[in-house]
Image (cartoon, rainbow over all chains, first blue to last red):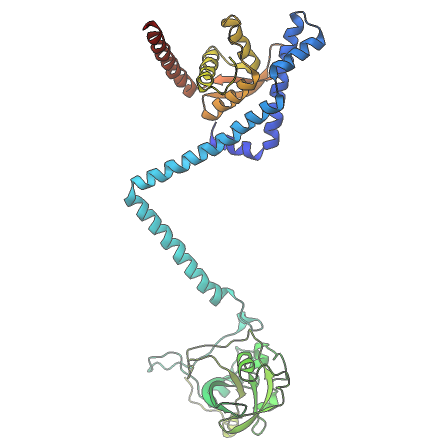
Length: 294
Length: 110
């Protein structure tokens, strides 16, 4: 019996039982018929035939057991045989196992990376239409150079490609008050940064366009991590004041937990931001446009 | 031919069934009839031992089974000897001869 038949047999248990029932029944009837011909009465004929069968239930169980045990037997035998063959060819076995291990390992590693980098959705609105723009200086080895504020303003006002642009610049600042002085990574961004990304703070109003104006820029948005660690997740944090490099800033929001922004190219600190602050473009640069652009 | 607990008897049953099927496909009842008839009623195969044995032989690939129509138009399962079964039959016949010879020798040596 091929293994396919056996497999099918396993899956069609009931059908096999019915088959066996029918087989036994037809056997019994044939014997009863012969008994009749031999001269017995119908009841005698049937009774004798049944007696010959003995315990039908036991018979069926024994037969079924043969089917199942036989399958198991065969399977175990096949498995042991395969194992023996493998052990007899150690060279082949080693190569096969190594190949499998490498393949599976590499696959898993690559997938984990791809999963966290590509597949996990970016926490921004419509990430497919977000583009990072750097300045490029052919003289400089690094093709991703940070653009200067005046050039950025030119880009912003004169480009025909992007619906909106925001400026990002990170640095390390000192956070004091409410505990130990701590050096944190702060991202100076255009006031429109969060609205461009379509990200709303989980508490607080966030930045308004006004915050980009001088005198109205002493506001900050905390990262979720910083809020939890340093401010113990204080739900009344909005409106409180903190000292950044000695200057008081008002907290106007906390970023969502899954919000992250980390682009190494052009980053000064090379670290994840813990706070966002609106960048104020110095006045003279907003008046004229510069011709030097690259 | 009684209890199948005895390994010797069980092995003999397989031999008898294989030999019976060598003449052509038969259903279970036909097999018992044939053996009973040829052995002049001395060997009576009990269904309780026949069917487990038949299914075991089917598992081992010595016989193949399929449904067919009996002489009096009844549906019955016919068993047929396979090539593997034929080989098995030849081997079992050889073993049987050797066994009976050996027993005879021991018995003669009085």
